[in-house]
Length: 235
Image 1 (cartoon, rainbow, N blue to C red):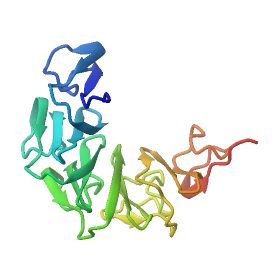
Image 2: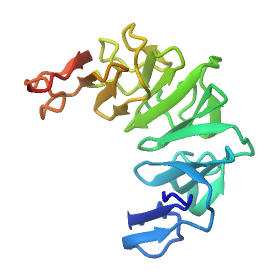
Image 3: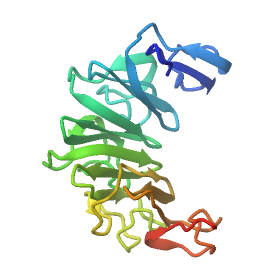
């Protein structure tokens, strides 16, 4: 996004995830997505993209293999299409084939649900479904097949795929509803999460957990950890 509110994308476009139509197949330089000048945030998944505008509307485009566009259908959408009619979206995050967003403090997810990453029933959902009844969600973070979100009290919650402990609840089972990560109330937002997760607390501390086969947890080892551990930087 630019300071004038325009949105620009580039790279691979096999599934129309750039939002500029089915061509070019690969954009090697930035191309403008439509003519709107009120984009506020954007998030990219494996084959789809979603963004929120300053008027609180939510838009998605790309490939909807499992309903991850939230448009009620499967298939491709080559340019941004509005998800429902709500004008109260404050954020969105795209996972591998699912999406989650926050609307007026409520949390909604849609798309593929093989690991329970939607926090709802069914194998997939083609339109947003509310996750529980809480109205204090502040931010969502999804990647791969795992979802996380933070609440206004600073607590962090994760659910979905947990094969390497990336949910952070001390297990490797796949929770199908938001599960609290420890008891800290100082998380600043939804974490970056894939096969491992990392998030920042209000004191500036960085914490990571999950898969560590490549040393991605930053703790000096390659040992998997199913609960958050602080990353200590060298002096």
